[in-house]
Length: 82
Image (cartoon, rainbow, N blue to C red; front, side, top):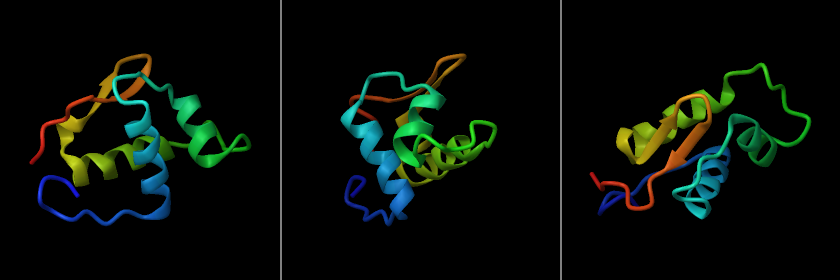
């Protein structure tokens, strides 16, 4: 649920959201995300992380996941609900 709105997630979206929520406030590098969500054999050249972060931003709100330039992504500890 986001606020009072139900949000449906694919299995991969759920894994990524769970990773962000359990590490809220912590910057996760693209490589960390790839390894933890897609596995150690994932193709590091793919833009799959960016695509799925975009999906989550669309569902949770653009301001809920912050891009930390040159480092990775971070879910805000208290993201705005909306």
